Structure formats: structure tokens, C-alpha cells
Image (cartoon, rainbow, N blue to C red; front, top):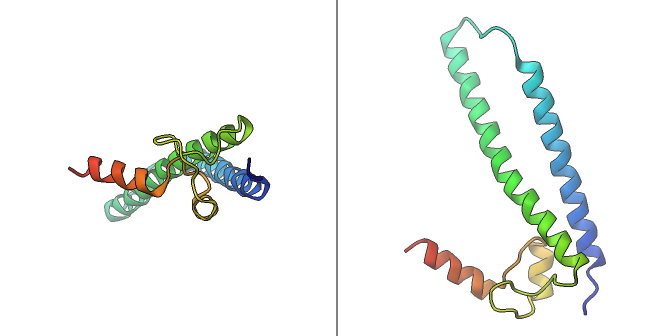
Length: 116
């Protein structure tokens, strides 16, 4: 069994940063309530900015869920094993993508299947 203490700490820090980001986004949304800008061009710009923020938040939510799952796998001693083939994921890959659940080969295969 490998020691994943440093990776666990990285995951915890990433989780905290994402949770803080969501909290700030929610505060921004709450304070955004008010009358719309009378300038139509400005309204369009504000709408585009909101769409970008929501898109980034969705990507971050996916990453947060992957982080939570990785932390759970660490706690249950399942971390570092590919969910597809069961082989050990190289430590270097886990350092680079600490929330990954798949070895590179299985991830590549999933990507190819998704893009057919």
C-alpha cells in the first residue's frame, strides 16, 4: 500500500479552494439582484459574463465531485487503482492529476469510445 499523504493534502486544499470559490460566486449572485442595466449593450455583456461564470462553475463542480470521490477512495484504501482495469495507477500520474480514477490506457480508451 502506497502512502498518499501528500496527494491527500493536495486534494483537501483543492477541495477547500473550490468550495471557497463557490461560496464567493453565490455571494456575488445574491448581491447581483437589482434592476437591469438600462444600456442594452451593457446588459448583453453582463449576460455573457454570467454565462462564462456559470460554465466555469459547472466545470469546477465536476472537478469538486472527482476530488470528493478521490478522497473517499483514499479513506477506503481503493485510491490509486484504476476503476476500469484494476491496475495500479502510476504515482506520477496521481501527482499530476490527483483526482484521476483511471490509468492512462483506460482513460485513452474511454476518450476514443466517446469520440466515435
